[in-house]
Image (cartoon, rainbow, N blue to C red):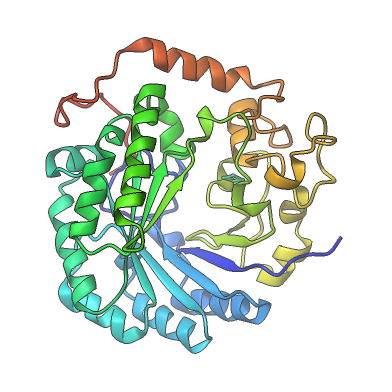
Length: 369
Ligand code: FES
């Protein structure tokens, strides 16, 4: 079978983070600082990635700016000709730090945001972060860098999607990802507080379409689909081991950021194997590459060329078996695991689009502080 060249590398520099977002997709068991790769090891990763033909690197975390060597890594990545994007919470960032990133050659910065009002945003993040973000956005624009933003949508903020878009536009956003929550890590733990109702979702989709028309060429708006409400699964990661790879803070190489949650699989580390070998030959990357691994109902399904059987992590988290069809699929024998949950969330309590945005939030489970 022909193996493609990966396009992007996600480098999770650290799991340390000033935020404690209730939907964080980082694993429940976070890597400690003392296990993080050294600067030299990260530079090796970047050099190997470039040799393989990778063109884009996303520096993320946790909060990647907690690593003092970020500028050094950006400079090396740029020397190698990689496009470098940095994903940050914006907390603890100074104007000087943003200028340094610009001087190091960063291509774009993606800033996360939780909600349009500080009260709600800070409750969701478990930290007083909103005002920091506002300042960071201003400094990113002042440094002449493109501002990309990401807002995770869920039951507590999705009714405010129009306000969210307007606020991001007022901060100077060029590209805004409206990411409906994907249920891995802490998001799965808290999903009974996060899944929006069908009515909320319909209202939000209308607001998104209105904003698309209103801001047309001014900003790029991305809508990440809420797959629990779909009949067919998303083509997760563009297929397992097809487009991108993730290196965790301690050097494990994963086909996607959530894959360490699959406890029945073992993942190789850059401390022992080359990135190229892991991509091409490791059992973990080969496990679900292509279509041959599929069993029914995927094996003969006409959708398999489009959705690749859906998400392996979701299949594992909901059924305990990562080789199953994604239960989001209406043909999956486990589809009821999704539909029953969705039904229970729609029966539970009413939703009003005029509900108070600052109402008391439920008691979530948070990642460790
Ligand atoms: Fe891992 Fe979908 S998140 S395959």
